[in-house]
Length: 468
Image (tube, rainbow, N blue to C red; front, top):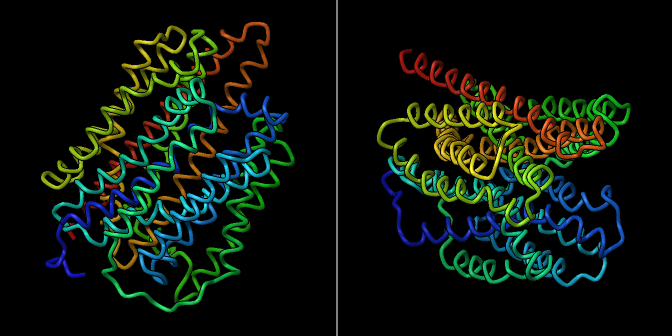
């Protein structure tokens, strides 16, 4: 599609909304289910190690499906991919809503993961392909706020539904939204590029999927077995070996599953690191804040989840505005402003960790949400702009895959830090949780500094490229 042919019309808006609703539903239900664990354990008579597969299994499927998104986009039309994704997600949602046993609930969540794994990159591919360059920042901001804000919305929505209607309502409430998404997508999604009849590299895919699976298994067991246990170290080693084999095989392919040449572009690679660490911080805060509010401040689950909502609303409003700023003034000002706000928020959380209250949680998280709204969409847009257009699907697949992995390892590491402090002071859970939370905030503050350093590196290298 030539740049002169690109325009923002009703069909493009509706297609982004359709894919966005499904992506939002997938991420919201992922985080909303976290507050249902105690209820599910009691209802189905299972333990923590079993119920956590509701989230871990879902993340595993996402990490296995998203890497294939570049191939799927080249091989099939966008509408076929969307219809397949929405039908799978609906089947999984209905199955999870009516299941009488935990095994079928887990199967429903895995099927949902397949649907989300197809839909999440699809939304960004529609924007990258069909939006005019002068409006790309705005539309990427709108698209990215969906995935950026959903992890914070999930706990409050989940807490409200579980408290008032039961955990099954989390799935039932999604069905009208998914049906709306289906009809909007069938009506509006269009194809602007030719599909290619290319073969799927099954062996390469096996090594990549195995690498991600071992990685997620390692992070999910680390909180119990310990990060330096033989089991965890063995899984991490297996993960590294599989990924290295995958990369070596991709170098020899004319049509690789993921074109790893994207990593030769240093500004893009640094942008990926920025997005990965922000996702780590986001999901870390999403765990720490409700957990602290319940165990230290003694608040109920619903109120604890709602602490994130004011920041979510502000972040949702700011994302399109920050994208518009990128279109008008370039990427540097909004991204660095956002990075600074993230540092400010994490430093404030660290300094006042032992004296936090409801008001300070809301205020500091607003600073973070402000920074996230200015950073995430613009960093993704600017990073993908560093790549040739033909590598954008591969870059999109890389970003979405690594964000999911960052969420998995982020939650595991933060959980391990808090659990270690709780184990040292089992008789004073509130004090132990506060101490572990402070240590976790220190880590998030360090990562926030790394984020702004990576962003500065992007602009320094991009400036040299322009001068050359």
